Length: 286
Image 1 (cartoon, helix red, strand yellow):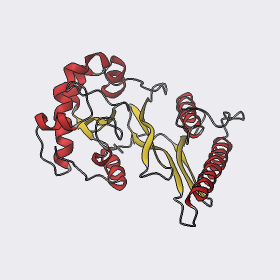
Image 2 (image 1 turned 180 degrees about the vertical axis):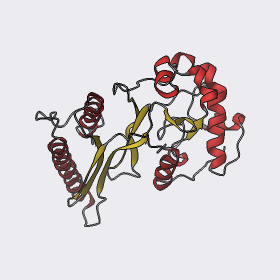
Image 3 (image 1 turned 120 degrees about the vertical axis):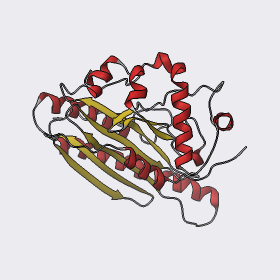
């Protein structure tokens, strides 16, 4: 069995950028960027967040959803059991800076404290002095697409806690309808995944081909982490780009860490029959 060791974190980030759609609408959706960067003795934290501005109903609806994502992720960043480490922000959410300051301060205190405890424990068992690995967390929530019909924000983070390697986390890409600001929860009819197998197989083959690995499906299906040769839909909901829907599988979801985050684009004329009515209304204006 072949092993395909060709994806680094830098390649993942470049790939994500390449798949993003940055087509601006005539009336661009206004956002404000907030950036934080801090380091402690054994940890570092960066946050890069775009939040909608304005009092319009659409902007407020999208901002609320993105703030909920921020709360959910940053309150659990070092948890293996998905438990919260600090309570939600209870102030005025319309004050975006105060909101993000609260999550930065609590997340930074958390990762600084736990990384110090980890280093102290390692020192106890090592019996000698050496360079302890520094933890890091990079929280990103950025606007990556803005069209007349929808706007897409990408939630994709990187965390390293002193192990063999770090990992990419987050909620993936979130597509919002610009008519009323609601999040399109499902792009595809998940009950029809068996009918989509040929599309998914061809997409994965294209991914490996673009990475310089020629492989047939008969060989690839034995390499992937899938049952009975059936490819599941990705945990991250696909999102629209100018060329079609973008599919991205997270690390270890269907492939080894070395194989990165398999990603590919399916043209709308191929995937439209499997899109939900809601997705068609928002993305295809049908």
